[in-house]
Image (cartoon, rainbow, N blue to C red; front, top):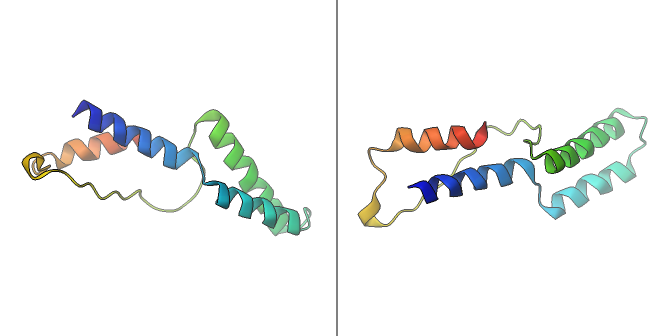
Length: 96
């Protein structure tokens, strides 16, 4: 179970602090296309700075996307029933 807990923790940290390259490129293209003095330009600059800070400081990217949702597949002999609180606790730990 410790391996599973560590895997979930690493997954949450990675998905909360690192955006895929195509998303980064899209933000940078939008930023380059906008006048830096407009609201859109300022917003895109703030987003780009936030992405960089999240990566360098290993802190969550500031975004309002809701709760992380994972589908967990387990072998039949290792059904998670009865350990839902344990899974929830591990998710909270990884998201703190």
